[in-house]
Length: 206
Image (cartoon, rainbow, N blue to C red; front, top):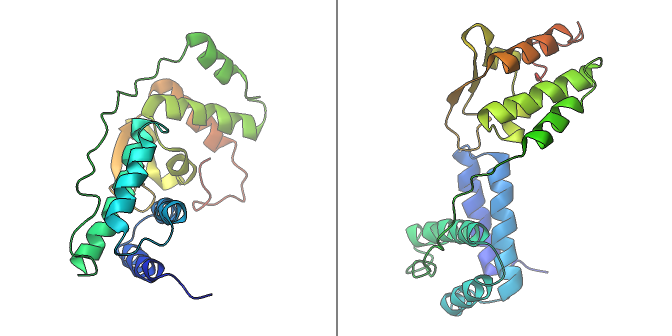
C-alpha cells in the first residue's frame, strides 16, 4: 500500500527536525499528533485540508481541555508552517484557529500526601535511596522525569547546591541550572555514596 501524499511530506519534515537535533520525545509527539489528525480526518490533502482543520478543532472544543487543544494546534501549525516554507501549501490552514484560554496550572499537594510519598521508599536499599532523592528533586525543581533519569554525576554540583540540565537531554534543547535544597542535596549524596563500585561516570544518577 503506497503512502498518502501528506505522509511523504511529513517524513521530510521529521528528517529536518532530526537534523536540527530535536529530542526523541519531541519527534515521537509530532508523529502522534500529526498521525492522529489525519487518521481522524481521512484523506483531506490538500483540497479539503482547510475545512478538515476547522472541523477537527470545532469537535475538540467540547471534548478536550484547553491545554490539550492548544498542544494539538501547536504541532499541526508547526508541520503546516514547514509545508508553507517549502512551498508545498500556499498558506497554513491552522492560522485561523485561535488558541484556547488555558487556566493556570498551579497544583496544591496536601502535606499528608507529600509525607506519605517521602515515607514510602525503603531507604535501606539502593532503590529506596534513589526514589527518595528523586521525589525530593522533583519537588524542589519541577524537573521533567526524562530529564531527571538522564542526569549523570557530572551534571551535579553539590557543593554549590545545583544541578545542570544539559541541552542534549533538555526537552526544550536549552541547558539550565537549578538550585536544590539542603535536604535534597544530602539525599543525593547518600545515593551517590551507595552506588555500586562498578558504576562509572556514565551511569545515570537515578
